[in-house]
Length: 286
Image (cartoon, rainbow, N blue to C red; front, side, top):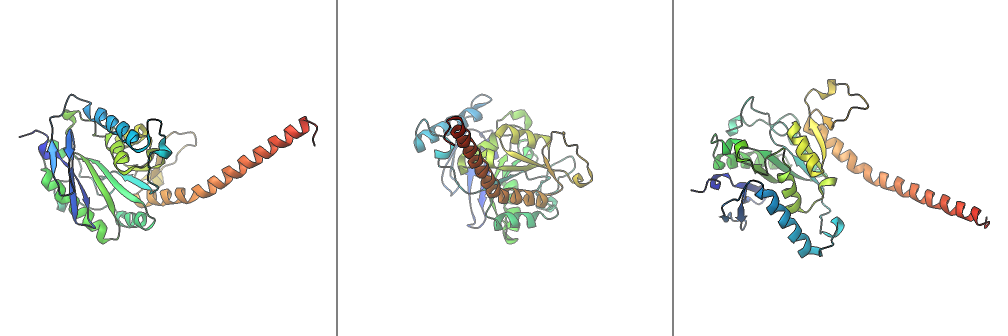
């Protein structure tokens, strides 16, 4: 039996009641019916090399060797990346969620996911689930938990577009386990969105590091953040006390973009006008 065969990543589309299996390390994946082909993974770091090669080939196929981000067929849809434990559901102290009975949505999470859906955002979950690699939970049981929580989200009029798991243990030294940015880069590649324009919501330093390395904007969930005073010069990620507050910030930031773009254009036009006036004065035309 292949040692990675029970650690396949499963991505659900609850609205269509379908799923497809995705590789966690060194896998070729097939159709939405769940067909998957395994190959022996190479040395440590192969994940990053494979991802980089796929990215370059995709760029060339889509738009040529000299294609930039704007020509790469990037989608205009807005995405939000979310950690799972500690952001969507309550963490198990000192352990993992290994059954649906242990899965507890945090306050206002379903409301937050509904707000994202209402505003047209696609939510993607990226989570370390080393419980599979450590033998504490089977992939089948993890998939069952995933299906249940996505169903609950859908019944609350929210939507999780896709779920990416790293099922490896720390000892596997894979490229997808956070704080490495492999899962984030893979989601960006497969859904064709720009990481630098995307928010990542997490609750740990490892989440922040993965987001920073991938180029995302980070929002850190800290339950008691409303009681903390932050100094103006303190360098830290944006902080929210729960997912709903983080989503409110994301929506507000997106709504502010047109106003900021208009102000930037106005400032640019004023600068160009001032430059023309100065040139005219220097040439004695005014």
